[in-house]
Each structure stands twice: as C-alpha cells, then as structure tokens.
Image (tube, each protein chain N blue to C red):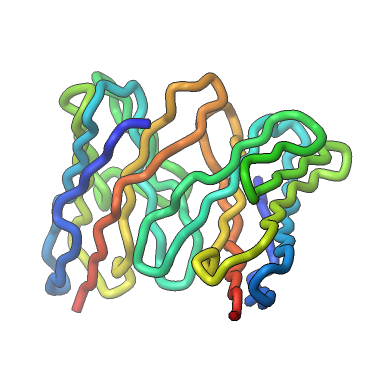
Length: 110
Length: 115
C-alpha cells in the first residue's frame, strides 16, 4: 500500500511568517514529488515539483526533499492571507500514478 | 501546460441515474486521468485512459460503475452509473505535463450531488 501522509492542520501562521508544510511517503523508490495548492471549491494547482535531494526555490516557495528519510516539505516565506488554502503533497508511483496525501489546511491571518 | 475543460461543472442527480462527464484538452495528450475527491478528502485515482486502449482501473473501481471512453487524443468521458448518494464527489480530469517528470495538471472539476 503506497501511502503519503500529511498533518491535516489547520496550520495557522501570521501574515509575513514562514509556513512549513511536511509530508512523508512510504515508497522508497519514488522519484518525483509535487506540491499542489487547492483553494476551496477549486481544483488543485501545481506549485512545486522536486526530484533531487536538497532544496528547490521558486519565488516565496521552497521545496525540500530528503529521500533517505522519505520526507518532503514546502516552505512558504512571507506568508500572505491569499496563501490560505489546502496544500496537497503528491508522490509519483510506477512512473505515471500520483498518490496524494490528505492535505494540510493553511490559514494565514492578518 | 495544456488547458483542460470539463462539462458539466456541477450537477444534481437522482439516485439510480447515470451522469457522463466530458473532459476536453486543448492539445493532444497521451494519457488522461480521472480522479474522485470526496468531501473533505484528497484525490483518489479512478482510472487511467490511453487513446486506443481500454482504461486501467485502480483497486476499488470497476468499469461497470465508471465506464470511460477515450475516442481521441484530446477528449475523454467518465460515466458514473447507477448513482447513489455515496457517489457525491468532485470528479477531476487530469493530464501529464510535457516534462519527463510526469507532473499532472487538472481540469476545473465536476461537482456531483446525488440525492
């Protein structure tokens, strides 16, 4: 059973702070990892992809991957109320199947 | 990434009826995916649809309940058959991106309520 686990939250952070979202996965052979943002009533939107150990930065977002620990995280710097959403971690399995975590709800308060 | 549209965007249906959801992509894609997102839950893959072959269903999903068509490289349909209230969900169509890492992109979804 391939599993992706996330804390459901809500994670509440003040505006301007760093939000840290975490995800663990069970399949040690997984090679591709994704973070999606989903606003209420909308479909998931891809915001970050990461394939190699270490950090990958894109604007205010940084994805971190540690394959030895089977751990992937997403940092959001200078959090804004518009970042309030559910963040879904997804892991690619068997080259074409995405396994999603249950998502972490982020609330950024002014 | 490709632009994906779905029809209908939402529907309210009676128990025992069927609904067909259409997914249109603005470019040719090899693989299309159908997901279900039940209220308050994450996405669960129903099946993968390749043009010219039968859809591949995930454990817990069967063709009789969720028949899928894939007549060409830009279009697919998912039918939810003999519906019950437990089928009330958002149904999402997705495709691969163009990179070799197989990221997926999603349509806007179809919100189905079964009474």
